[in-house]
Image (tube, rainbow, N blue to C red; front, side, top):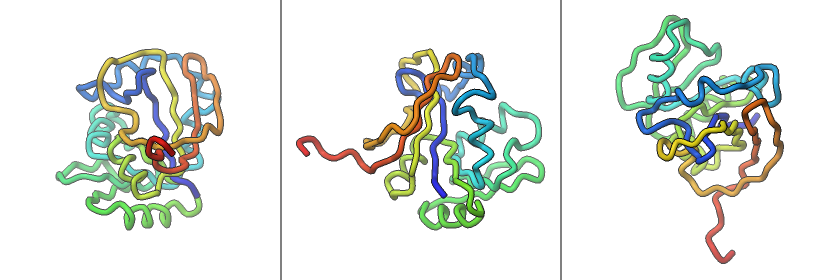
Length: 181
């Protein structure tokens, strides 16, 4: 069982614009049966975590049923609506007990940290982030929400091209050592 951050990024390292838009991503050319695509990734996922902004974005931009069959933990300090019969659990505070509950609910499958970057950073700070998967889109944004606002040492495990995307899968070694080491 591993905990993954699977996401897309602009070439200059942003996962969303300053106004939280993904318009830059949604028109890009990708092969849904291609390497490192979401459809193959999600099959191995047993539980998800996301921040409140990501959750609200999903609610606002997908008006069908909740798109995830897996139980989802949403880290928030606000009251948020639940769509339909979705298994959504609103939480706050220490991520360690939440991660333990997610791992148990995943029943041997992996955990996906959907976003955002600060939430994923908190998992990394606690040593609970195993892999980072990034699909780099051929676009720059100049500003926005950073990919992962932490200094981490990563090991490249896999690289692929999926039409317009450069895809990389990294193992998290830990925090980036201080300069001079």
